[in-house]
Length: 282
Length: 282
Image (cartoon, rainbow over all chains, first blue to last red; front, top):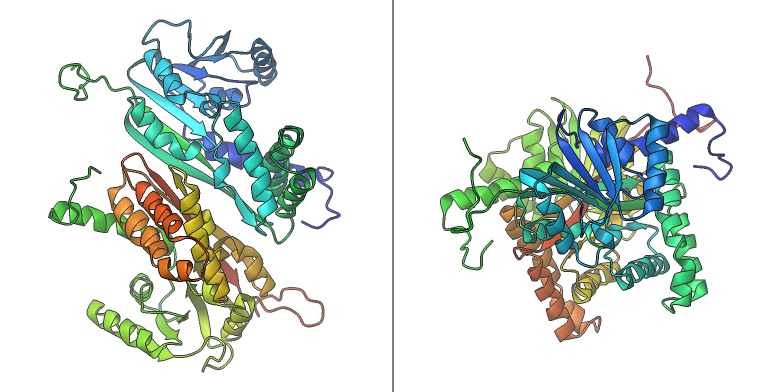
């Protein structure tokens, strides 16, 4: 991508960027589709970034999306209305105090939520309770420790480490993606399978250079600048050099790599006597 | 995998481990197959670790495998003989002084070679010379900076860094995988495409736990112990803790991630006047 490339003025180019942003949505969500009539709980929908996609991929499913923030629910409502989505019910609720009877849902879907919970296993337990026997749990998380790039840069790695440390200080875990397999198993899910979804960005993919390397990942790191500096985690000049080096990876000869993880598990009933997984009633 | 699991005694288990080691071979090589009668140069075949697979996937191609070491050529010869491979000619040769006329080969194949060259672009240039116009270049490399794991460990990261630093000191680059796209473009290849091949290992994949996490990656890091310690890169106890932490990632709740990169480019003739890519003669 040359320096005088102006993003968004050429409609064909705009379309290409949107298509490649769509590639990322496909990468994470295209293999999640719930059957007609099945009930799905989306826990921690936030501002609905994933909700529209979730609903579009499962048009016959009955989706309930909850979030602890009333503002986020209002924003999600606006998004769903604008997109004409009609199979989602919104509700303000706390994952740790859900207003649903046990075994209410056929499926639970969780995207970029566990990374914020001080006790992710307790969160998974709470969600497992409202899941029917044999119901499925799907979890998607990123992992900031999976980011590496060319040219490599110690400053860029330090700036990313600030984000990881700040999230840890807030009780979260920005490296949680890699740990989904043991987390779901510890929370009692059965038949756990995890698949990594790697985003590899080179200059042959201008939509991802712009939409992922620059506007998603680097912008996110840039967003913790004042917290990192005022928290004494890094000097101003080191942080700025780190961010500049991250933008440098978006140049014509730069490379950026990041991996999301998607986990799937089943709420198999366990025999209280012998501990074995039960079988569905015939 | 429980602690009393004994690897290799149960024939079914042995088969399963072999199958999963085969998965890794498939991951790297299954999409490389050269047509009947095409000539292929495998440059830097080493002890023939990839040569048997290369030949098996392209039984009709005429493969010439070269290496700078006569001992390695002899070992490759033994492997090919044992496997009954008949479409490979072996020859001792230096990549920078190849005994072939220009434009001798339809394809060049290079696996785990660039990482050892102080001047990888010069190496690609030398190989490009013996490639016919419109011939293809295929390159596979690892990237030790792509390794991350659960539980995370600063000591394990330090031990890996020793291997990276030692390889750099020897003139190589253990982080070269991520840079294949700009390297092939700088060497003048056209239509460069790179695809990452991520190896994700959890306890659900015992063959990879044993065959990759333990016996490939961690064993390789363990192999630089004395060089790292005598070179003053790390203390004995830090290195040993790092290696122990890498083995720890092979436990039932551990995770290991690593990414190989595979690049493909075309030796398109470039017009000496205008610099544009030529078209094949009609």
